[in-house]
Image 1 (cartoon, rainbow, N blue to C red):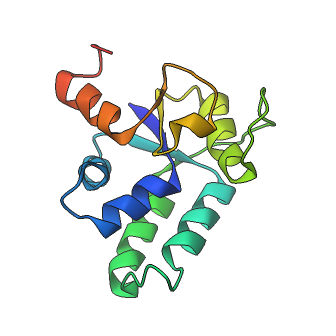
Image 2: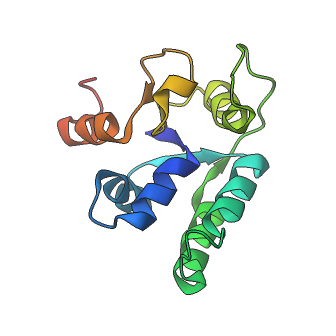
Length: 135
């Protein structure tokens, strides 16, 4: 299964290690799914997770960011085929479309067009638990 993971899911996972987003990160770290990225997404992961307001320990961030850099599938994405209101969300949508991702997982589904493959963290975990074939 190939997914695009919005940065807000990573932030939520680090803020609450027992929550649903943390479960998604664990699934990713187990290599159960493949993360789709481009340079813009990796840059956003680095910049957002290192913001002082979160105060995430660098020694915890480094292995996570290294994992994403070395275990993700890089995608060359073109312009979004639809208008996305939040410019920060554009790379995630463009990569998902260009790679024909199975899912784009985001805590802000309302920022994207309504598509069956754009799902919340809770919905994604339901899909994983039921098995990929039973969407």
